[in-house]
Amino acid sequence: TRTATAVSCVKYYGITKGTTATTYSPLDPVSRWQMALFLTRMAVPAGITLPSGSGQGFTDIGTKSTEIQKAINQLKQLEITVGTNTAGTLFSPDANVTREEMALFISRLLSKATPGPGGNTEIGSGSGPYLSIKSNDTDHNFTDIETIYLTETRTSIVSLWNLGVSDDTTATTYKPSE
Image (cartoon, rainbow, N blue to C red; front, side, top):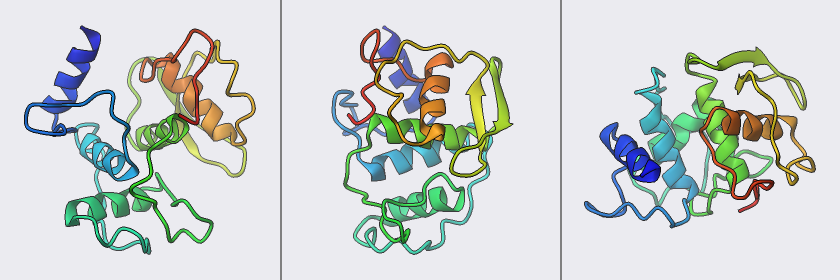
């Protein structure tokens, strides 16, 4: 099946190690620290050079392993995350990643990679200019993303859907807060 192929692919590239040596647990929620590991492990196969991972001021990651702390700090260095508070001192590693956050994380990581077929990069606008990788196609059937505050988030969701990275949960909803 399509899902089994995708899981085999992310395991092959070392993006996931599974929840055990023989279990993936595809229906489990993904925490922010797990997403940090997925993203940094995905960066190298995507041709992205990872920064050092030196401390970036997050005060709530000290109980996590060195590997997790490094991954979270690398995401900050790559400007994939700014944290979860306005001071930029919290990452909230144990909180679950929402579909909205997942779209932003993946889009921002992809902006560091060279686009493949069907994608392009451009400077966007909104709360500030940002480099985005996006689909040339902008159509979608989502009825629940127009109220999302950040233009970057809406663009990320639509682009990832058109690039085939993210499936919709129904024919017309994305469910960004799940």
